Image 1 (tube, rainbow, N blue to C red):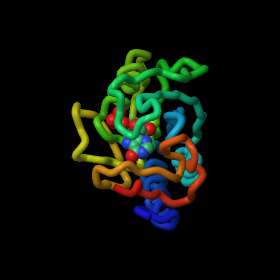
Image 2 (cartoon, rainbow, N blue to C red; image 1 turned 60 degrees about the vertical axis):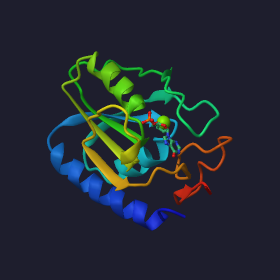
Image 3 (cartoon, rainbow, N blue to C red; image 1 turned 180 degrees about the vertical axis):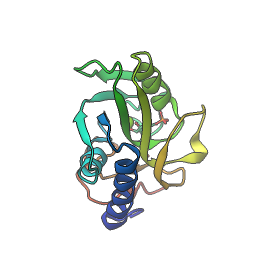
Image 4 (cartoon, rainbow, N blue to C red; image 1 turned 90 degrees about the horizontal axis):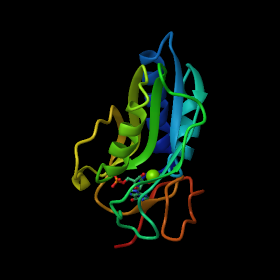
Amino acid sequence: MLISSERIKDGIRKLGAKLTDLYAGKRIVVIPLLKGGFMFAADLVRFMDVDLQIEFLGASSYGEQTETSGEVRLTLDTALPLSGRHVLLVEDIIDTGLTLAYIQKLIKSRNPASLRTVVLLDKITGRKIDSEINECIFNIPDRFVFGYGLDSPGGFNRNLSDIVALKE
Ligand code: IMP
Ligand code: MG
């Protein structure tokens, strides 16, 4: 086990409080990036006292592997226009940065009033391109991790409450 559900909850509670302050008086659109970001986003919004709507974006780059294919595909697009809206993008994990760069470029092309990106986990040594993350809760080593919504080999285990690392 890498990060227990208690530690995850503590980290998310603090981030929720911070975002509540940052967005005081604003209406926002929270966009969980599917699939991996669904559980993090579901917990995060419950710690945010902000007027918010939810939209979804889906991205995939891993295929069936535990190494990124480097090719990002959009698997689901938003239903409402993002133009003029304050957008909070919620992602599970950043590694090379390719997924976030692709999604951030897409969102920015729709002229939001602002864009902020929060990630639960950062594999900081994996970065291949610069990326603008506003908040990250945990830095982790370059290991394949799963549980708590994250993808795993075969696609099962997203319903684990803790974050675990694959045996090397
Ligand atoms: P990047 O594009 O290399 O930054 O990879 C980020 C994307 O790959 C995220 O959207 C995750 O869904 C997925 N990902 C990266 N590392 C892991 C991992 O260790 N476990 C599960 N998914 C991962
Ligand atoms: Mg993902």
